[in-house]
Length: 330
Ligand code: UDP
Image (cartoon, rainbow, N blue to C red; front, side, top):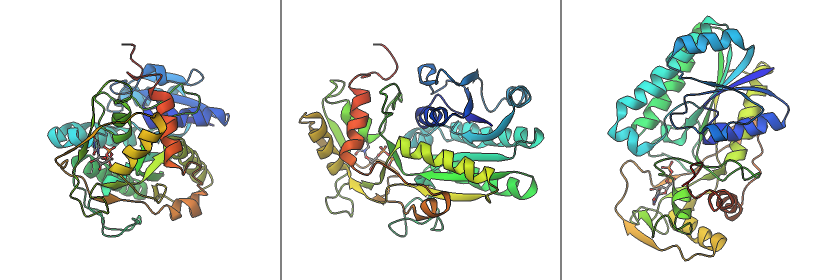
């Protein structure tokens, strides 16, 4: 059965394609290459360049390929950018998903697994966070993802379509082959930015605030390996194929690390002193985000394999030290 991966040239999308192909699945990728990389496209996947906001592109794709399920990663995901250019996020994330659902309904495609985020919660009321906890996003990115979930909910009530929404915490690490990894331009995520220091691309890492209500004053996050996220998508597709109801799941390790702890682990992994400088807080950052993923473990049978943050950072370093400029050759 063929799986369509929208955004399969991006970070989490490309890792999911690698895992699907390793499991012998037939994979079609569609990606606009706006932020994705052609080099990240698995050679065994059939690739189509196009934008999910283009309904003719999607209709033709669904007519040409016999798609059983869709995994939807095609979205913008930079929190800071979402605050300065909110309409870009409403357009690509929300309107793009609306066009996609229209085309899926029209073409009788009835299963979709899609990327959501811990940013849907905003400032959490409890740690670890449960799926049913309050959702009040503090940035446009999280708001558009929450709106995407709600759109799926209402569409699934009206039409023959079921969805699984996966709320990721902090995706990190890279594929064991060393062929693909994280490559955003501009980069805004903590671990790749830290690793730019030993790579000689930056002098220091800035710690965004050390006056949070946490033990060392820096923000706490739940770091989850990208391959574990990829496995969850595959399990979610199987769950829908087996008749599972539409549902929403958190994906994290359930253990929080502060920004200072992450930097310390990166020092150990790389052997570089990695100078760190305290700088002002970044707007919209909650003090602590740690997932309860019990629901995904129980219902999807998800078993994340990468618990040790040092090993996760080592897998990221294995990619970044050999690709200091990502996929670009500079
Ligand atoms: N962070 C930081 N310095 C940086 C980048 C990020 O201190 O140069 C902090 C950020 O404030 C947050 C954590 O690292 O508390 C993780 O940020 P990231 O952007 O990687 O992921 P997010 O939690 O925003 O999804």
